[in-house]
Image 1 (spheres, rainbow, N blue to C red):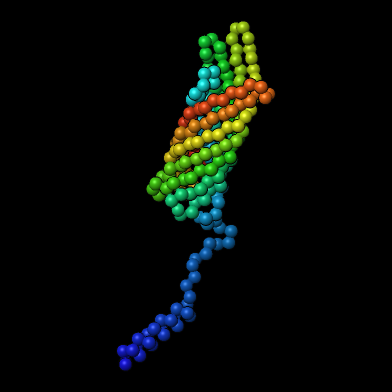
Image 2: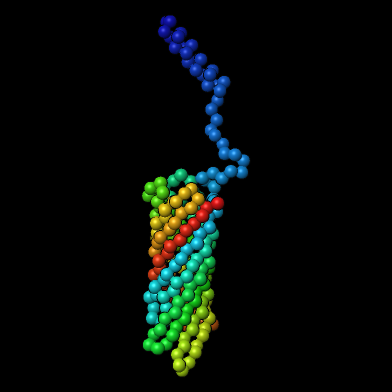
Length: 202
């Protein structure tokens, strides 16, 4: 009986202590970002694209990205990105000099899959509109034309976090563009691209 009374008294003491000093989860300071907030990321990428169509030169360029990134503690971290790019290429085919410019504006989504604490596999897709200019010239003629049309890209790469706010990326991307000239002629071509970039999160 004494043991039972002692156990009841001990239980009552523990309960009263817990109720007198409740535990609160730590809260972030007002206005402070948490890992579950979408955080802005600015990145600059250099690209080199190999064309899969004769008459379209290989193109090198740069792409500026603005992203909203979720850094929640999870295996998959989501990212939505708007991008603007510039690509330029020049090549000679059988004494015909061809110059090409491509200006894509796209909206994309990336799934960042954590491989380690500092390395992520980046799988992404993007789509939008591209403006372009083409020029052909030789000793007999000089031809120029402007075009525009739908473009999309699929890519995969590796991101390495250098710090909490800076990362570098190396990847591969396949792009396809459907240029249309004044509703009459169509140019459909693909590009296999190498992407290298750096991003900063604020």
